[in-house]
Length: 332
Ligand code: PBG
Image (cartoon, rainbow, N blue to C red; front, side, top):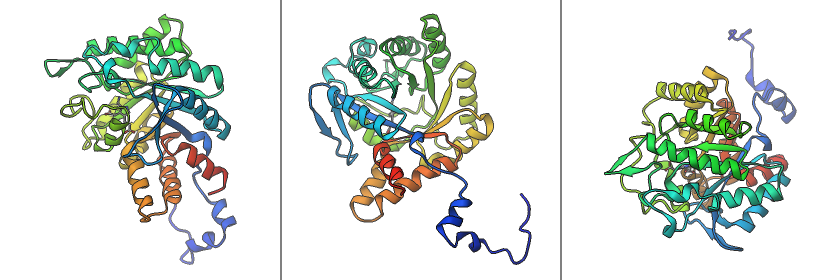
């Protein structure tokens, strides 16, 4: 960086009007940067509010199709599906995860047939189907790695078969990306993309999400034996490098706002398509404060999303997606 050229340099000159400020704006946020995570539930015409995520509802399949239509009409490129599984279908073996007719796979088919232009992303992890609440198979209190990877591959293949465009492995088992990539190639799904949750931290900010997918009750303990320690940064780079080598097309940092330094390091180190997940607890914080009149919700939303672009991200998974899309289109 050059030193400031003149002792008369005044930074305020370029802040004097909206036109001048626009000329020197370094980053921008557009609707094309948004991926919308949505929660699915069984039934028809059902909306179930999630108390800890004001404004977010679980939607039955018919309403998720409508939501996908709305997202596409706003210009949102992708929607990401998370199922609330009937507790009666949860088992220790997690078999529902690779049922070709589970809620997620039915939703993928329904959305792809009604709104083929929107990209459908899935979550690949066992927690919504696991009677024990973990992302992996649990035996005697231990989360098994390689057996979980085998289960995840079955789950991923069924999602690809149903028409998913992007698979999002969020489980943090070792070797899952390579195993999934190999299985996809062998099954003729070479066009299906993988967006790896590569740097995923063991975070308290996932609380409201676990309510939304109904995993809070089942989960005993924490996920520290597979998710990252929030104190670590170099490890994130090693995980991202590993996942890219194993065949991930895109990588994710999660949570988002408390981990913007990680986003920047990942983008600078690899230049790969990099996404952040503005997770449920981040959404809840902004909405909670806004509902109390403590902050301006729309402005805080846009500022928080712009921060991801500034940190080097190509896009953001955010529960704000439709609201942000409307605000961006209105020029906020
Ligand atoms: C689990 C999964 C989680 C989220 C996405 N996938 C929760 C967890 O790891 O416990 C969190 C998303 C959010 O908080 O918005 N496979």
